[in-house]
Image (tube, rainbow, N blue to C red; front, side, top):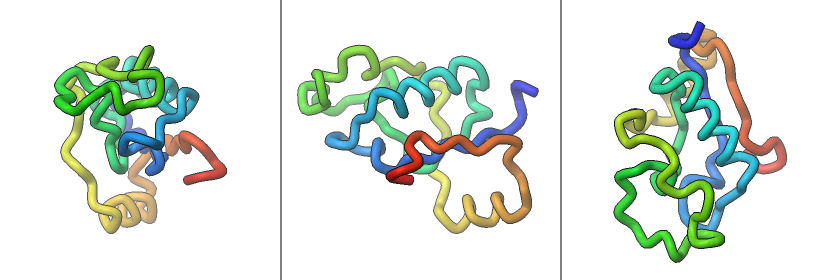
Length: 103
């Protein structure tokens, strides 16, 4: 079941200024368990080891979450239309919302 596709949704955490510890920790944990099988709509780049941006602009300087996921686990961007099509086909075995108030 670890290779079953999982979709993670929380567009607010995609860029600096939208950091949400709970949401980011959920994504880090999903990547830990399911690896590349986790598809993320609008990946938060700062979570990955290859992030070249300025981590000091992140909440708390990115402490505890920035650079937490190996860069090799990052998937190519998924267009919104493709996400919708996959959802309609019931492609994903699990859909996780990082934050139900924002997503």
